Image (cartoon, rainbow, N blue to C red; front, side, top):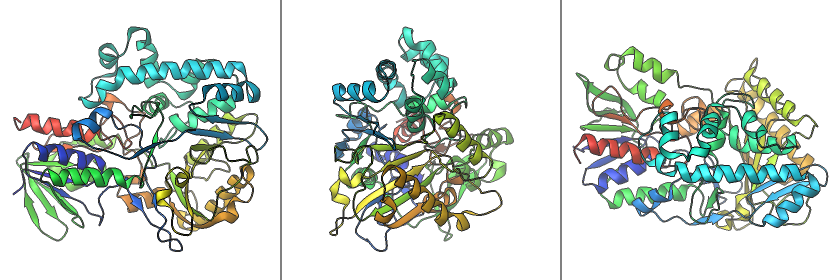
Length: 512
């Protein structure tokens, strides 16, 4: 009989397992799929290019605290993207964000304005300060927002921090005096909207913007990094650490229910009828799946209502691509490293923010936007280890703001047409891209749910509009039952802090 059962072998569950096993507890991890990793994995989904690897769920590592890497003694082959952002247009303007500040300043001044450059510098200086201030808060249980500000944030930034976490992307970006709506739209798309049910004027999008700017990985310069071998390298190495400390990892072991007696957890029952007893169950599954595993009478209605209130629709479409070769951008035909970064495809209208607002409105109405916000990746240019012998490139379109359910039609009927339409948008910036696509593997919100086991296809489990104590608590009303998923503090993404913090809560409860 194990001391602890961890339900689900996503990155947080594996972190919790490694920490608990290292402290001498016997730990069994139960994973329903045939591979550990959850949505943090490397897959080979292309029938015509079976040796081309791609990170199908999470694309990049950004938010895992360096202190956690050190505590776990986890070594990862990280590759800095330099440049890290590419903002193309359909004319000759572009921005290529990298470590060459002088060149970036030249582009800002030539293609946009001095005001935009000054705003960029001021905003990123403030975010860098908040990044350092908030670092200790991530590996401790959460405190309410005002208390977090008082305890961690330097006095000059406390009110700005509170307004950012509660406010909208518009309010934060407008503070710095950007002249170009195009530049504001880029920052809103990549930081405020990612994985979120929210638009430019939605309260809480500021919280998501903050979260996405808290990368402190060694050598990153504050920018998210590529992991050699894909994101599966992260979870495979954490799994190896868990096994090294004595944890048992079982795949194809789907949990059907969590056994509770008189308010105390007793273990789990697998789908095949096998029963496993344990004093502690830590669930890495999203909170809504976990509640379905527990008898309704074991948790009071108020708690279930609180958890249900955290539910939001998945708004993400992931289109993984197999490319025969690299495209050519109209605005930057020569290769200056523009394929490795996050490529931002934005509507080219003068009212770009209005166009984005219309896209969000369409998604909320159950319709597919004509021009959604799109992030485009080609990671094999930085990590050639994933290329196959034929030299294919992996690529992905990360499309924000699609409906979870379509009005008047279905994803099955619309997927192929919409993927073709999205590629036609790529063609506007890099003519001929569609002809380079040999095969695609798309993950709509319903497919994200079935492929990764995430309720409603919400990649962060709980919207990152919610922060600190507004997220899912680690403890539950059932003695011995805990959460460690991305729905907990600090945020949804590949972070590992929720697994770390939940493990420490369990160790404290057990007197360890």
